[in-house]
Image 1 (cartoon, one colour):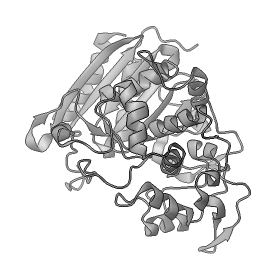
Image 2 (cartoon, helix red, strand yellow; image 1 turned 45 degrees about the vertical axis):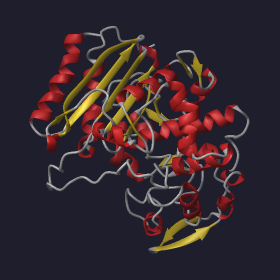
Image 3 (cartoon, helix red, strand yellow; image 1 turned 180 degrees about the vertical axis):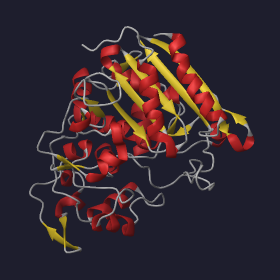
Image 4 (tube, one colour; image 1 turned 60 degrees about the vertical axis):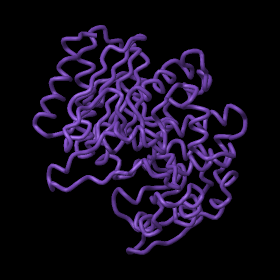
Amino acid sequence: MSQSRLSRLSDVLNADVDAGRIPGAVIAIYRRGELVKEEACGFRDRATNASLRVDDIFRIASMTKPITSLAAMMLAEEGKLLIPDPVANYLPEFAGVEVGVERNDKLQLTAPERPMTVHDLLRHTAGLTYGLFGQSLVKTAYNDAQVFNLTITNDEMSQRIAKLPLAAQPGTLWEYSMATDVLGRVVEVVSGRPLGNFFEQRIFSPLGMRDTGFLLPQDKRVRMAEPQPDLGSGHPIPMADHTIAWPWQSGGAGLYGTAQDYLRFCRMLLNGGELDGVRLVAPSTIALMTSDHIDAAVGYADITRTLFEAEAPTREMGQSFGLGFAVRTHAGRNPLPGTVGDFYWAGALGTYFWVDPRNDLIAIFMSQAPGDRLHYRYVMRQCVYQALLDWQSH
């Protein structure tokens, strides 16, 4: 990779920090076994003038989802969890779930045509939703039930969701949802341990991810990156306090971590499930997770295109979804550079990663700037690939 061309990324980020657009960012770019760029720009906390360091800690939000998905696949490899099984086999509360159909501004309930499966949870086709994005009677029911609540347990969260109507028939619609949170509860039930404990014992400790978790020790609190006030309103941006032992260990959005830790997770994925002599899953499992699991008969929720734009895992964008990741399926259709087979995901608070197996490449972006999250995903893609002078498309 051209270091002079990579410096364009640094120039953009430093200029945006100086202009007050973002508080700061950490980037890590890894290629062919080498960390070719690791840099911290700006402030860990602009209010106190604290400079950002490469080992500082970020709330990674939905970048929790690939970790939860891997946990489920580890249990599947052990024969303890079957991916085609109905969710109700593991969470009996979902046995009686119904589908909500809106007619004349009223919600009518109908039986599902087939059960939601663990496969559906992994690929966001379970009929579940988020109350946070868009408007519908089902989303209103989610908000009224307060399913996105740090003070409830994973069991209570699952019980509440199971009492709500599905937003679509299972297997018919890709909708970004709390499916991975429900999957986290499945991991708890199957493994017999709290989700955070499973993560620590089976993933974080073996991979050497020392600064990732749900509960941040007090001695690491000073390393937590903080957002700056919203540029439009001037109001503070609320974010979770990870020094509190919240009952809800969200498999969909609850972790904090560092760029260095997440790079180790991505290196394991790139290496086919193994890192530094420690194997978490088989190469066949990584291949399955990063394959296209959304066939042409599956539709996309309307919010998908507006929520993700060029990063949307839709056929129009030459992308799809696997088991925990979006995956690129076509060389064209998308305005952002990439290669067929690259896989990625992001967090709503400003974090992003992708893995490009064809180019032996990993890129990670960490910031706490939710309002500009799409902008910096686009900047990262463009600036990283323009520095790749021996780009491989096949």
